[in-house]
Amino acid sequence: MSWTAIARKDFQDASRSKALWALTALFVLFMAGMAYVFTLVGDAGAGELDTVRLLSFLIGPVTLLIPLTALVMAHKAVASEVESGSAKFLLSLPHTRRDTVVGKVVGRSAVMGVAVLVGLVVAAIVVLGLYDAFDAMAYLGFSVLSLLLAAVFTAIGVGLSAMTKDTGRATILAAGFYIVFEVIWGVVSMGIHYLLNGSFFPMGTPPDWYLLLNRIPPSSAFTTAVYRLLPGDYGVMASYFPDSAPFFLSEWAALVILLAWLVAVPAIGYWRFQAADL
Image (cartoon, rainbow, N blue to C red; front, side, top):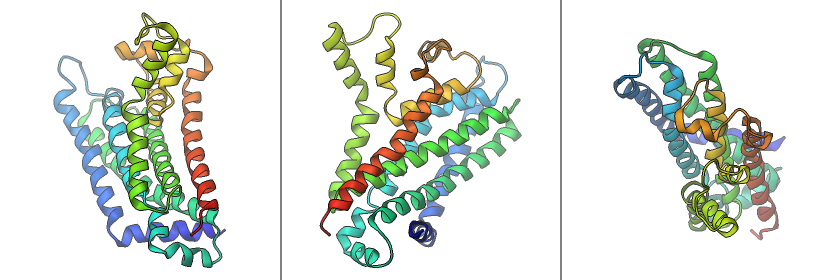
């Protein structure tokens, strides 16, 4: 399959340009640094340092850094090839436009995956050395979900890139996606609730449809899956992730949402790229 050649070239180009090493250094400093910082701020009156509390602490920073990094790295993947004219050469080889999109998704996801994985491994070493308890299964689950989140946002970036021939527009699309789904999506939910109920915020326990709507953004689906994975009670967050929730609010539904993003945006990007006149 020729998409593998494109993916391999993308990964090798990242290695040669030092992009892979820079990303890896970023995530090592971030993951290991956050694990160390938690030893300074996380034990105040809370007993022993343990992995589960660290992972709860990491959810917010991870859902900020991984999406931004992945979108920055991937949003010009296809558009830059078209804009520079190299896409014509690429497609003159035995590669189809589908191979291009799939290969870019796989290659750049591999770059992100290596960087995130090395960061998680170094952070685990810090935890083993400084913490009182290490929950290997919780840490493994968090690591797998973090890698999936990185792949999802990389795929979204590539898909958005495939929708346009211009890198400037690709940047606008990526920024717009992030702002809508990661910054102001809560406002959308509140607006719909206002139209249906006459108030911006649900009183008492939020209705199931409101919770589902708020879990559509990829980082929110990731957060749902992580909180359902972690043992214990996390105060106010527990009411948003109850064990009695219907299936469409479960961690499995959250995984379905993540996988839907992983496939849907590149598929739409391919559809637009397939119809584009290069």
